[in-house]
Amino acid sequence: MTSNHFGKLADGRETTLFILKNRNGRSVSITNLGAALVSIIVPDRNKVMADVLLGHEDAQGYVDDNSYLGFIVGRYGNRIGKGKFSLDGKAYQLGLNDGENHLHGGKDGFNRKLWKAAINASSAVESVTMHCSSPDGEEGYPGKVVLDVTYSWNDNDELTIDYTGTTDAPTILNPTSHGYFNLTGDPNNTILDHELMIAADQFTPSVAGMIPSGKILSVEGTPLDFRSSRRIGDTINDPYDQLQLAGGYDHNWVLRNYDKTLHQAATVYEPKSGRSMEVLTDQPGIQFYTGNFLDGSLKGKGGIAYRYRSALCLETQHFPDSPNQPKFPSVILRPGETYRQTTKYRFSART
Ligand code: GLA
Image (cartoon, rainbow, N blue to C red; front, top):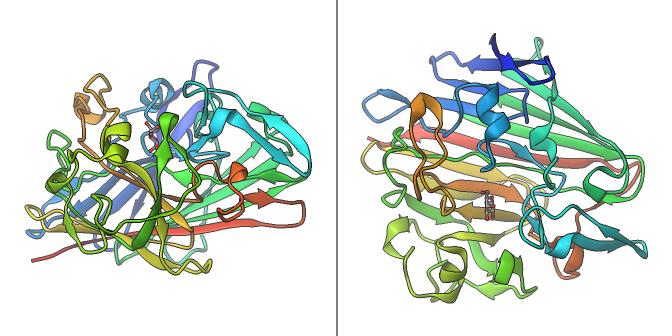
């Protein structure tokens, strides 16, 4: 593993970039600022290496970012309606940073923290653990939460992200990794030609503000049916109310066979390069987002403008607004319990 300076924050603190390399020379890099994934460099079918992740060149890029490129988001990945929820009969008001709603942990979420990094020298594969602590009351959440996120990169080009979290008072916790992928390796291309499979028969429809209505609907007969792999661009502009509401795909799918063990959640394939990415998780949901808010104003690595639909996100998590939806799996964490999540992104190339 190599670690490099990644730039100073305004208050003088140094940030670091950790580069995890496997035996085949493929690499993943992560910064301790927001515990963000910065790059994933993997081969296409002709063994040509390219970076399949959107990101920034240095810490300042992440400080200025409002699109959550690669960050670990939390305490709550995705939205909580009006930022309100009740727990054990007590009402809480979270910070509002997405219109009248709370998104991705609020304006001072996990993505704004400088995490404490530890290289796992005894691990059989390259691995680094990021540690952060969120004080009681931060962004309105109860309880002091501590979270460890371990990134491991093995010789099979599998990136594993393991989370463990604890609290000292009853709270809610639902972090996720917000990587933006473009398997062509060139974010000047859109992701419309990528082919996607999502292992889900149902999704949670949204109402205005992208808050779940609380219903769970079948994907059958809708443009959200990705049970068999197919081209994303074929249906993204369909005149379907859910797509119009979100300006494309930006929804939560209810993963099949949720039992808290690792299952295949999604597979993306990009036909020109042959690159493929499988997503496995032990979480109940996956947010598939097609970069509908990217508009070219955000410039990333190499000064490239990140345009509309130039990347896709597959965020493994609990469903949005779960604290207000009794039918959704629980996101409550109590003292003495441990929050756990394991998600794997597995890269390969088809000939
Ligand atoms: C998630 C949300 C989107 C958007 C992005 C970040 O994927 O569902 O609506 O907020 O994060 O821009």
